[in-house]
Image (cartoon, rainbow, N blue to C red; front, side, top):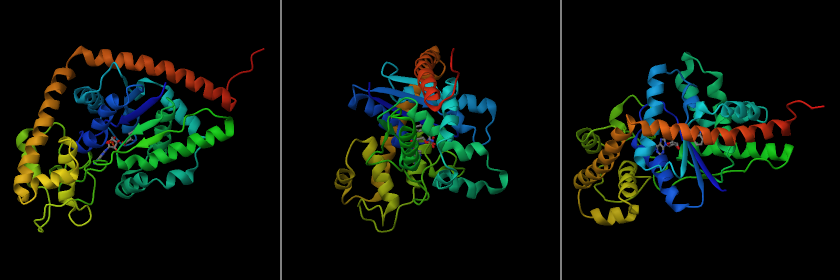
Length: 334
Ligand code: AMP
Ligand code: TRP
């Protein structure tokens, strides 16, 4: 059976960037790839690589799972679970660390960026080895594809290198996965600063639309989004990055190509375009929020997560046992 695997960290509040770059893509794939099996998890072990408050982390993990379902993840097609409930992720993570070099981890740009920001507060060892745990999350299930946003590309390349290295050493064992990065929306930028991506952990909340924002907040954030003074309706990532970002959001939610959005608003000012974009985003997110509220307090969520955990555990247990034997771990039985 061919498989697709992905995950999201429950750290911070989910944004429109997560929705467009990862969640929506995953939901679409469920119908585009009918013959595939889907594994999707809440990456709570990844969240604790930086300090978390226990009760809040638990709440956020549930929130992420509920948002996935609200967005259209079908539990009949997708095995949905919490990463920490399948112990083999941590176990395989360790085994793979033995096939990963410090130099490779030092080259990870996300790690380098985080070190710059967190210098004095201390960098955990787990933040450094994070990409190896991510590799374990993925190759555990032998997927063909991993749908992610642009910022995860380097981590998937490392995952491929680790899988190939292991296969060369111990014989073909892991499927070497491919990243699936959307053509549009792989990197939704901050609405106030088009040089940085829209991010969950961002304190300045004007630049990020969260999946929980109400209509007024969404409208206000889109109205105040930074554009340019050219007044030209054009999809130009280089010279008009703020506008291009808004066009991208419009095109993904409205199911149109960026050029079609440009054609539709040719001759109109940015203000009209922004008002219409706000309506589009408000409609999408309010429908999402309604479903989320139905799911979050229902027992359905636990049923889905229980059954996801059991299916994932069965697969993971077998895979890790085989992996350990390949490496030479375990007893010789007389
Ligand atoms: P994270 O929030 O880092 O756990 O990311 C979860 C998923 O959302 C990953 O596949 C990311 O690549 C994707 N993602 C996060 N932020 C953005 C963004 N601003 N634009 C597009 N995709 C994003
Ligand atoms: N590291 C990813 C992020 O920050 C989340 C993640 C963890 C993930 N394990 C994964 C994504 C496996 C895809 C596949 O976005």
